[in-house]
Length: 224
Image (spheres, rainbow, N blue to C red):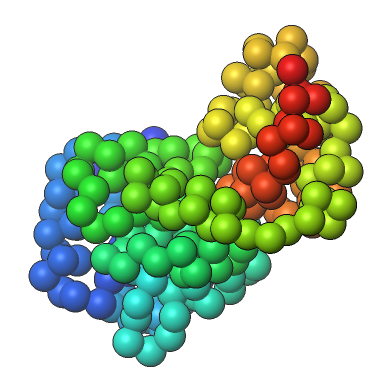
């Protein structure tokens, strides 16, 4: 059967077969997502990513042969147009931090409802980052507990306009939406993001968002 070309092409990576089958059936029923294949191990997932080059990889953190975070790093390095969305039963802060640094676009707990899961998949497929409420709470706890000195934070090297742009990136806005908000062309927004990413030493919007959130509260007032 010929599938609609505008559907999101997704690879499902989960080591529990029953969970995989259930997710596949539920996601296919939405009509917006096409599950190109599924995998229960990291090695099998790598073969399928190489073969299908999916739009999104829905990835479990804990796989029997390799950590999902390490697999995520390899996917992001080799296939920059493939987005990675973690789905895990164990949302600990260290793994969440590692996944963001490793280039993940989103992080979800397995208690998430189907509507929110589909929303997250669509968000990361369009280049946005996505954290569910549990993961967002973990991120904020990590940032509050971190002892990063302001003079060591690369985010402070950003110009005021670059900070405004990255602040909107952190809110999950697209380049077009940022342009409308700041009255800039999409090309100009893209240039600001490119320069900001270079200063921050990141390649992904989710990474930039985390770096931005580490700016001390008093310095973020420069955005107003």
